[in-house]
Image 1 (cartoon, rainbow, N blue to C red):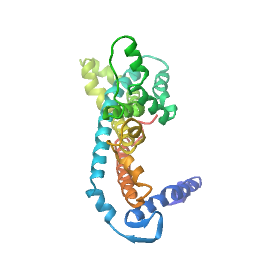
Image 2 (spheres, rainbow, N blue to C red; image 1 turned 180 degrees about the vertical axis):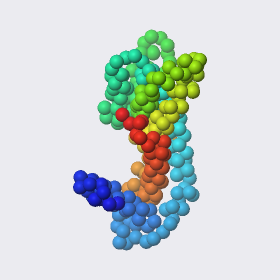
Image 3 (cartoon, rainbow, N blue to C red; image 1 turned 90 degrees about the horizontal axis):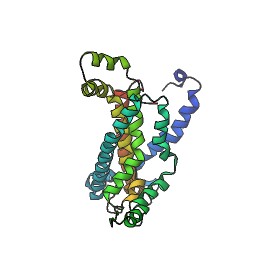
Image 4 (tube, one colour; image 1 turned 90 degrees about the vertical axis):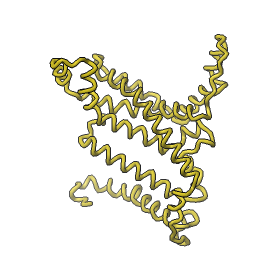
Length: 278
């Protein structure tokens, strides 16, 4: 990379990236093909056993399966909730639409650990929800904390704004004359949506899917708070192995990074102009 072409102002950023991103990435790659005692590279030996274990370790297969399943289900639910909300807000005559969008992201301003612990309390048998149900005589006990359902609910409530915002941004930028032309040609609202709105909002949908799927797939805080040890995910596996097998952790981290970089390339290919960004 030629720093001169980027300009003098880009030089500090380039150095910063090399120190805080480039060197750690290189260290991860080195650790992934070595057998070391922690970060002591001098006493390490070259081995591909860490990569072989990636395909043979049953815990990795289970964690990968759980991560993908939870992420896909949560992403699909976020889409079916987020798209209608983004569409309604973008097409509404309300003058200050950003107020509604801000309301949708306000929960993200609170600490995620506290927020998910609060969600876990609501989903447990001793929650205020159960107290209300008992007081009105329903006798129904809502207790799903520690189940996959609770994990998916937590993921949806945490990452739903990441689906709403890019879809809203794309729909908001669609030229109004296209809707008028479709109506003039005899298309009703349903046909206009499926033939004009949805195809033109595909970039936002793609970006939203990736922005929701990636943190759902790679994270572990929500799964750890709302699930239990029987529902391991790739993030919790990294957390468990970190203290005594940094080499295998490096392999798992590289796999996640490859998925993330691949997703970023897909976003760049689908949305070269950055229209899905506010």
